[in-house]
Length: 449
Image (cartoon, rainbow, N blue to C red):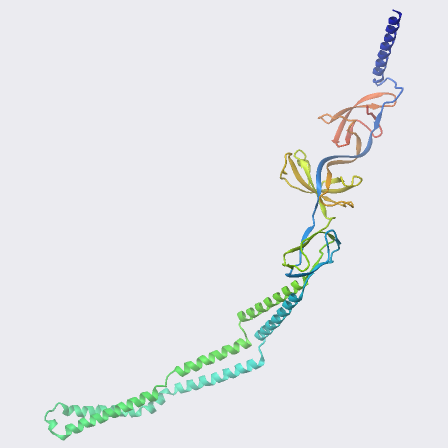
């Protein structure tokens, strides 16, 4: 029984002690109550408040190129292997140039010939001009002679056909004499009938001969010769004009042929120059596609070169965060391969097309200002995109300030002698801090418990 009384007394004391502690704690929370031990607090300070969006992704290369020689031929040299680092201007491979050099020589010869053709078109050979002038003079003399001969056709006709005119008159008289006795049957008994008939036959023969002689003599007196010599004169004049003053279309045609020959020569030289495959930028050879001795085409890939420093981040943002992300926003990158380093960059492009997969995500591309060493395309990246930021503002850790939807918050401030309630007006609610607009001053202590 004594033991039970002792136990009961002990429990009573314990209950009384707990009540005293509870009452004491309640009294400490009133502003006027003194505190023997100050509570845990956080000082209001100045700094940056930023709100970010997380975007996991990978590093992707922006400069990877399959290189070709640019000319067709046999691959004579291959100077690199996968993994080799090269500098811009290094000779990576080369072709056998014998056939290419021959093509250049042939193109040069064709170009020289076309130059001569063009020169002779715009500035003719003096000997050719002299010959054309001589031909023109000869044609002109022949034409003048034909004109003169044709102009005298009437005189020639008169002189060569006098016998014909006389024979024609004689025939008319003989015909009349014969006709006067031909119808008189009594006249047939006399010699005059037969005399006049015989005379008519002789005169007719003389007339036929004179007519034939006249036609034969005057058959060549026409303008055929004049026309023929005129055509020769025109032709000779045209030939001379083409030499001394070539038509525009001929000059243009010669100029076009010259330009085609020049372009063919340039192409042959270009292919010869392309016989060497030169690195266009600093990089690493990641693949070799051809072997020495193989015939390769002008567009056939010989090797693949990549610049490991020319990268960007391809990240994914969730559907809720996409409206918050804009081009130009700064970002910080964290790498699984190098957890001890971070890099900065910015949002470059946003693709408003949902990525494949179960989660509603959208691609965002970000530039990297200075890629840390040891990183390469394909590695994972965690991007933190700053969507809003306040600089040099009053702030408190987000864990201390529980803001309401109306932009206010209730906190407890340690005054040094007690705790008082404050109503704050907050601004940007960042990832780690909350911006304080009203209700606190820099240095004040806010209870963190």
